[in-house]
Length: 140
Ligand SMILES: [Zn+2]
Image (cartoon, rainbow, N blue to C red):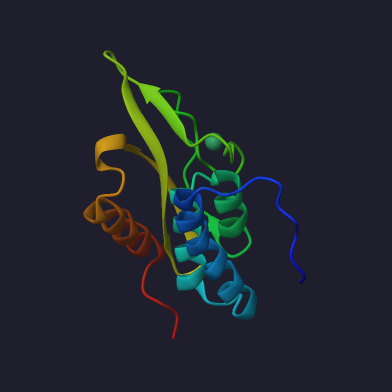
């Protein structure tokens, strides 16, 4: 409520990126049970470089089922996940990886994706399918 006086102007680029997650965050506040919306907000936060916030949003609604793994890349399991650590390098020559996530039925899996493929839709869908397969048929 009210408007904070900003001493510094926000660049247009920041405003454009910001508007996306701000609107989604407001929508989620009204519908905290909406898992699709929660995942969309986390995706928008990730795109905006707000990685710690993205992990907090995911953690509030999804159980992290990521397996304990390593040591090539930093482990992303519930215990090891470092919310602010969203990029890593591995290999020789070093290859850049970025952290992404997939959600299904109240669960989240984090994974490292090669930077060039990070926002490739098929990659996320493949991880989602794997997560769903692991969860088995929905209880009905
Ligand atoms: Zn771990």
